[in-house]
Figure (spheres, rainbow, N blue to C red):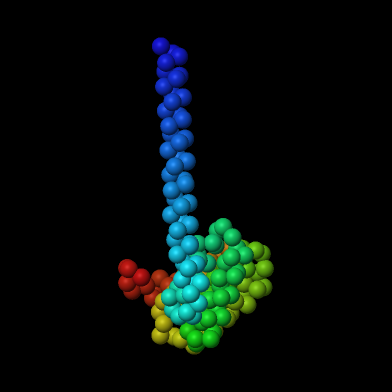
Length: 167
């Protein structure tokens, strides 16, 4: 009786392991297809908002996996945004640069891109989404550097300006 329970346990354990492997490979495959689709959009080199959105999404996808790719995609995004005079996309690119440089430990470069993002946001005061994203970036930057008092005003401004639940 005990040996049959052990065998059943081993069979269940093996089935569970196989199930986990299948689920993991399915998730990786789905993510790869998403990334491949985004890279195909970028490969068209239309230099339009669709490409900038794809570059932003690729930066987000690789933020915790491959920081060199984040640097590459944000460089492309910033270049296109500057050429097209697209303040919103430029601000988003700068925000990702802040995160990139902070994660690799080059804080002065992160501060530089934070100041560039702030400049773009100040030049576009009616763009609520840009302001919100900048405040998020600035508050996380300062919080992650242990400067909670400097982070707080950005967090409070976002709370004060929060008007819509779906934004």
